[in-house]
Amino acid sequence: MAFLRRGCRRFVIPLVRPAVQLSTVSSNSLLRNVGIIAHIDAGKTTTTERMLRLAGAVKREGRVDDGDTTTDFLQQERERGITIQSAAVHFGWRDHTICLVDTPGHVDFTIEVERSLRVLDGCVLVVDAVAGVQAQTETVWRQASKYGVPAVAFVNKMDREGAAFTAACKSIGERLGVVTLPLQMPIVTKDDAVVGSVDLLNMTCHFWSASNGEASNGKQGAGANAEGGEVEVVNLRSSGAAAPVGLLDERQFSELRGEAEEARQALLDTLADHDDEFCEAVLEAMDSEAGSEGPPVEEVVAALRRVVGKRAPPLPVPVGRLRGSGEEGEAGSAVLASPPPPPPVVVVPVLLGASLRGFGVEALLDSVVALLPAPGDRPKPTQLEESAAGGKGKRGATAEEEVVTEVATGAGDPLIALAFKVCNDQHRGALVYLRVFGGTLTKGQVLACCSSSGGGGGGSGAAGSQGPGGVGGEDSGGGGGGMSKERVLHLFRPFADDFVPVQEGELVGPGETVVAVGLKKVRTGDTLVAFKGPLHARGARLQGISVPHPVFALSVSPSKGSSHGKALAEAAAIMSRDDPSLVVGPDPEDPNQLMMQGMGELHLEVACSRLGSDFKVPVSTGRVRIAYRETIANLPLFV
Picture 1: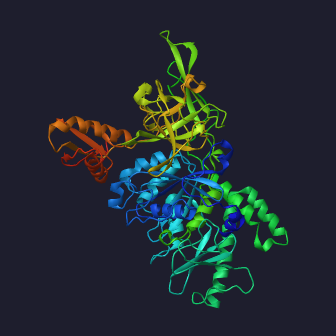
Picture 2: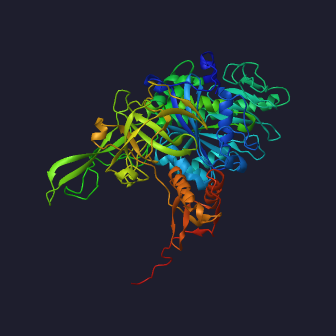
Picture 3: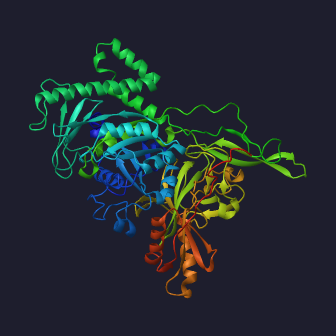
């Protein structure tokens, strides 16, 4: 969007790896934790790669077909041309720092989307301009809805034959149940070729060149691309404005101007319907001399940010006491002061472009910074604490209560963080990805881990489900009971498979995502607090990660003989720790073999391939078994 580029261009600083370090929480408002979600082959990784190139975080833009993209660094990913695991990258844009997570689009790796959305403050939903909303688009949207993650949509591949922006927006609205706000509209020639886009906020046309792209870092000319292409910008409201020669004639350009005015008015009307403050601004603008042009662009952007940030989980857990088994009433039932309010209408701004050619990605980055919330703008997360009730149960035992409280998210508050991902590194050992929700974290700090594997009990939290840091749902961690002592040996900020060290004494503040080394017993979904701190004493824990049940299973055994049985068991245990949706245990049909259970054939195929390539344990596999579920097909008419 040109209005953002014009207002911020002089402040842009080209950034190269390592990205800007957030050493204090004062920069929390300039942080964006964003994920890219979509159906497979919608263009998530290509969009991510283009973002990195525009931000100056990489010198060369990789391609999925060439197997050299930044976030698809696993050998399996490069060979197959798909994303298998989520990857986080940090880079700077418009004086902000963006932590971007590229997620898989295949249903077999849905756990990667689940645990990423658990800790994100916003997301970019990529939709294919030809296919529209697809099956996995609906799946990842349900996952985002579970945690109430605000979103902007990006209709990709607008340069392909059959691309239809209006139809794509309609499919987003109807199939996802949201209100779409198109911020752009395509410029289409008489041959049905898309040659650019109209910025409906500033009423400017951006005509794409035959070559790639747009401005890099926002500091070159009005459309100079890092790779030599040009984007010509034309103001629709200026006198004498005309399209570049050979694209649109005078009549077509006049029709485009009229269509753009209508689309802009529809955008303002819909926005006013969902934001009372903006509705008043529209009425005031109508009474002013500039009423025909509507409210200032700054007020439109502020209203868009407000309506996007309203998204919340459908079933919030209220702050209050949860009755334990020692009190009267049903165990674990929440004391509700009043029924929860209905969820607000979800509003999704929609942009368009073609990531492979570099079109529209700069405007998308501007929208991420301008419209998606900072960590401090999100509703405060909640934590579940355990404390003595002070009374005696029927058998004389002290009853236990569980209390839901809001997490204190300031820099000076007690530390509380969530381990949302664990992966094994051959040289560093277990890499634990942490999202800090409150307090600060430093290298060498001693932590207490509330872990299902450490006696904490896992499985389910409180009833209901909440946003980032909420309590509830079936989790891989987050149960109560035990704490294990852990020490942070090293901290890093991730850039795919590269890591920027956090220096000695540097503080990692609320909202930041870092990788910790030295946490031996931590699992996905575990809560980490300061050892012997106030939250440690109260047994505080956050909601864990919902892990889907496995669907496919097969037996595995070492292909080189029984001497590798121990190595296979150890390798399988490491992989199961990295991927909670991969379940490994004894084969009920043959105790001498292991049974590996996963989300699909591709999931199991990748896991078996990794056993040979990463752990040097080639395996033989049995036939694939499917966990069918039975139900009553027909009910009798009379009983």
